[in-house]
Length: 327
Image 1 (cartoon, rainbow, N blue to C red):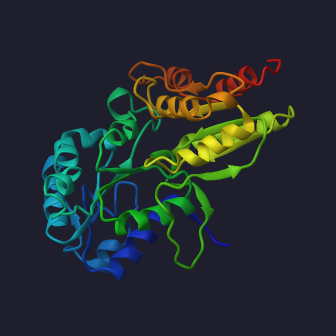
Image 2 (cartoon, helix red, strand yellow):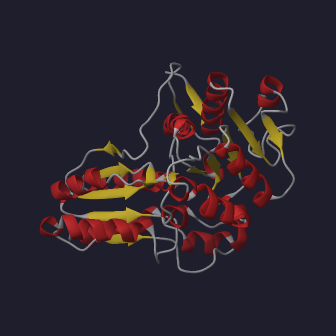
């Protein structure tokens, strides 16, 4: 099977859906003439023209609002934020308009819109450009929140998001756009809200999503060298969450460690810990451990970034703690 980059998988999904449905269009900063800040939309202006690949001013509130209005009137906008840090400027349109339109209209209006772009740390970008907002948006009824971890999932989930009748927050990572992975030539669509058991195991359940899956994979490899078999689950989406897959795994392994880049308070990992103790308490042989970012604005210095973020060593230590293995 061919291997393509994460950005190429996104581009294929966008282009295929725009060819399939003339209502789909892409709008955002530098998506057209510059071919996208991260080259996701490279070549799309030439194919689809300026009416469907639309450059905007640096005005997230404005073009997010235009997208919501277009969706309410029958179009299917894909709104690219250069980073979800900038989505805070537009959060009123996302939460108070897009997420609530269907409910407040009594089902008379739907809002089929996708807000997509990178989230989280991407190196030495410091506090204002390194935040994670998955848990923020997952807290909002009316939204779906998708966080793919590889090119295959990125393509299949983005196509599903574009075809979804509800507003979808589609969160990527600057550090993953160049990642390569196997992606079929033929069309496929993945179900939003269905987790993926990417590695079976029997001693502990490792749960994560997005680029933190890289930490989970590496930690599982390290643990395997010591005879600890970790079952690794990629959530793929954090609203809805596939609780059944998670709970069934814990009933088998009796332990869980959650890896999440966001801060610990009001996090997805806190929700997962609650659900497991609520639905699988009698199966737990150790407390759930969460590996999160340090509860501080992310620093600029590389050494402090490394000290703040989840890493393999922290995961391995946590797994040994819950399995009562010698450190």
